[in-house]
Image 1 (cartoon, rainbow, N blue to C red):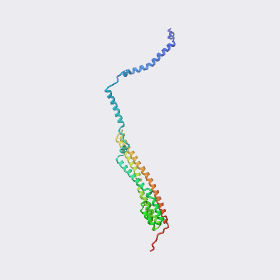
Image 2 (image 1 turned 135 degrees about the vertical axis):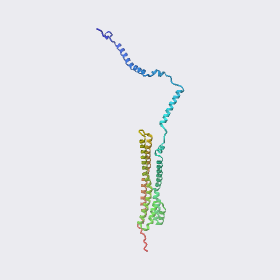
Image 3 (image 1 turned 120 degrees about the horizontal axis):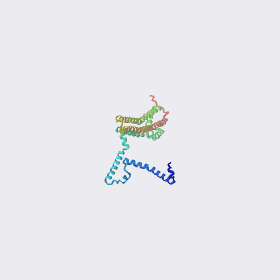
Image 4 (image 1 turned 90 degrees about the horizontal axis):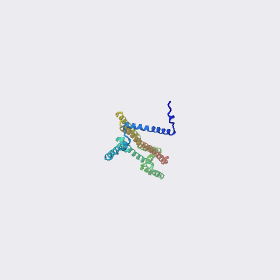
Length: 295
């Protein structure tokens, strides 16, 4: 009967420790050896060969480095491209027809705003100097001088007062009717001039909407004719036209509508003051009876 190995060579703590160290070394070195064998099989150069390879010096290496740097610079320059200002982009997106139309509307709007602003001043419609001098003439019973003063004044109040005094000989009611007629006529003139600002405010968004439709049609045409892969730059051109025409149209319309409403309210308030002031000044003739020629 064979004896066991453990009976012939009983294990000791030192032998067990040596066996464990050998087993651990084999377990650690086996994956590294396997990886090295696989690298040698696929033809990868050993690390020592790569480390020992001499570095390339001289003009060839410099030329290669310069060529690589030049290629990188060209790539960077091609990536960024020429920069275009916002004004130039806007002009190219709108096109000269829309640029000229919106410039004409803008200059017309500014001119109308200045004209209506000057016409809507208190000094133009209701000068306080005229009120004081006219009342002083009436207090002094200088009716002819009061009439000449009102007639020579170019303000709305002067024209209303001169119209009332001119018809005072026909009675107080006729004088009031004459004053109301002149006041309505002047109000229509001011409102007519203001209405052009409202026209620009209503017309500009319509022109912008027209450009929006035109730009979208251009983009869809590129998609229809460009096949499966249309150029993004061609699509962006039509979309830019659509958006910029809308933007500029609103940029012209918003100030026009705001200025129109502000000036219209101011004119209406000043004309109301003209009517109240003129009636107060003419109220002292309320008991005036026209002289009837009995011959």
